Amino acid sequence: MIRTFKRNLPQQLETQRLLLRLPQPADVEALHAAIELSRPELEPWMPWAAQQTRLETDEFCRKARLRHAAAEGLDVIMVEKTSGEIIGAGGYPRLDWELPKFEIGYWCRSDRAGRGLVSEMTAMLALYAFEQLAAARVELFIDAENVRSIAVAERLGFRLEGLLRCDSRNSRGQLRNMSVYAVVASSELSPPQPR
Image 1: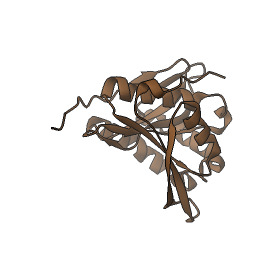
Image 2: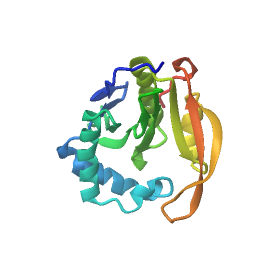
Image 3: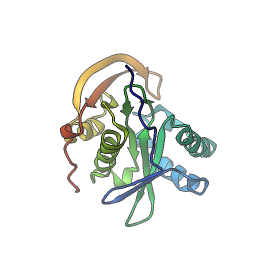
Image 4: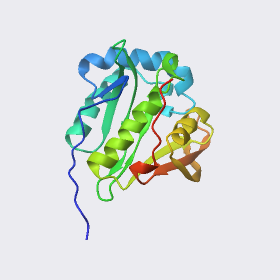
């Protein structure tokens, strides 16, 4: 028997230091500026960042609202509470309501990296998936050479489950390996420690 779950994706979540919310049309310029600022650091791990145009950023914001309305995914921007600045994005790029399971994706502006903000956002998204969406599983797919993202996964208690060899291509078109990290219960998560 397949159980059905309430498909209630949030429009906004809040952590100690962050507001995670759906992007609005007015966010396009600031979000694109954050991508531009961080392009050298994002490009090796996120092929979309290599040549992201302002028009594509606008399209991302528009599609984020459509995906949310259809309960097909959750794309949020990270707004730093103290400054009010957009400092990254994340969410559930892929989800499976039948299990249910959720993949979490994330990126942070280069000048805010190393402060535990991505860990804070990822922990909130994972907890919401377990506590509000009845997740059986939460996953992270990380380039096997991305040591900073791997550190986020391990800091939060995600377990390495395997390596997908030659699973996708990086921004230079080279084959890359992807590490699969997951947690299957909210009790496995370790709370992030603010830095």
